[in-house]
Length: 395
Ligand SMILES: *[C@@H]1O[C@H](CO)[C@@H](O)[C@H](O)[C@H]1NC(C)=O
Ligand SMILES: *[C@@H]1O[C@H](CO)[C@@H](O)[C@H](O)[C@H]1NC(C)=O
Image (cartoon, rainbow, N blue to C red; front, side):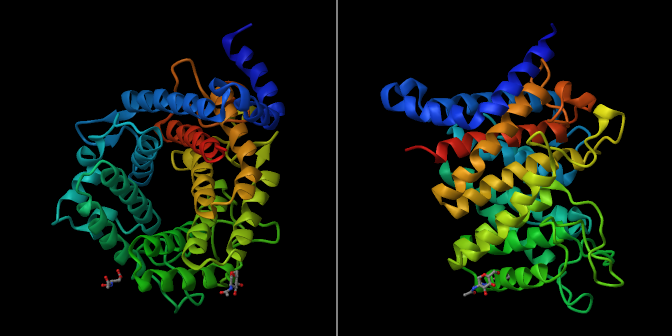
């Protein structure tokens, strides 16, 4: 029996009993501290570090500060993940990456032409903001100057905010400088960057933008009766265009609503968030594991492209951000075993013998899919999210 199929058998066992494993270790922790949730999470953080080191050695080009075959927005997410992990693990393993990466060099240069750097892409721009904030958090935690990252994030935010346009479909931020498409991700990110920005800087303009965005987005028709956000709007009719419901859209809206809940205390926003999280779990999974519509290599079908390979990982990352904002043990408990199952699938199905992670999680041997930096980063996100959720369950 091959190593992969042994892992596959282990996965079935872990998935089917994952919630009882968590309960069991919790109970054991009373009598045996070495089996407590804390040690379980520490093991997961160690695993995340192994995967992140492999990702860096396989894909990161320190001479350019970019990932080979990477893109601005996926590189930004990956660098964010390294800092998220260092904060969670209290480590400094990649402490010099930010300033030497190309996004960090741009942030540190007061003369950066952001309009040109961002290339007119307003979803990508906001992933850059999120990366800058996470780097700034890391630097603050280590007593380092983070002002360049914070001021660069504000500059990028202003460029995006200027793309709000009420003359087409009543509002919303344009996807790109072509100004011909209003889509879910750009506007969900604007909800998040506005609400999160307000929580950071208490600037009323940000909170006004967050409220304005949610009022528009929730009335836009982009979320169907099945609870899932589709890709975007038909710009002629201003109706849902019926395009793909991607996993990441369902969680980025949740982290945005979680941040707006932190700002306002309105818990109805959390119930709104969970409509899309629950719809993901019931509709965008195979045997309880996230499955993108392009995750079809196992049956000879579609394979996700570079962009799409990181979507599932982003779902896990933004669920974890959502749970951080909700800060409610009952809500955390509702999703922690599902996040544990994603982690298990990544480890047992997605990962190869080199600790690299492929783009399919629900089928053995990464479902015959590809190994790319975006897939690896997506798997890393699932591991970190699980580690942080079990940490927040500490008694
Ligand atoms: C609040 O944010 C807006 C938009 O970025 C900015 O123009 C304004 O100067 C900020 N206000 C303060 C008091 O910092
Ligand atoms: C709370 O949020 C819900 C959902 O968006 C909204 O309908 C309601 O008006 C909000 N309540 C307040 C007091 O703003």
